[in-house]
Length: 252
Image (cartoon, rainbow, N blue to C red; front, top):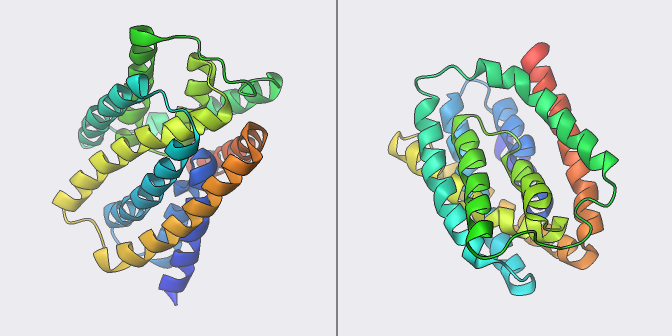
């Protein structure tokens, strides 16, 4: 019965993640609820093994319809991959409890800024070009990539927000570009989880299929409805992240 529950959760997670990121907000709690006695690392590794495929398919769909700025996004993905590995190593030697308490406050600031700037991300007007854009994109990839390896919740949403705020992308282009960076950081984490034996492959395969189906639907919706729809989903996901991370940090 548990596999049906987590498979449906994986499909919904794929949908949300394809639009604006944050699929882990759905699938990770579902895995922990279905298998409360399982090692946390195994559940996190299984989540990554499913989510990376949905993100890959979503990125492929976006790339066909969105003018991706590969000269900036490709090196940023490389920076994110390396930083995610460093973050995963850092969490083995540094206690992330302080970040756990700071995260809800950071997310509240992100949400408040997005709500205040009503035109934020509505128009695609890149602020940089050439090397300058690549350097800024790499800074985003490295910063959030390290965070993804070290802690993780809301990685996709942080990628989207910073690309909108720092690079001047609209929400649709930011979401499309964030998928490429998220693939890199997820693969880095998955390599470590696999090396440590923390992936349930018998669950990973059906979860991946469900995640891909949800991802395809989410990408189709985002491309059809545009930046306004993605912005709305971004606000909903960040609000949910505030509630979830706030509960984990202060009430649990």
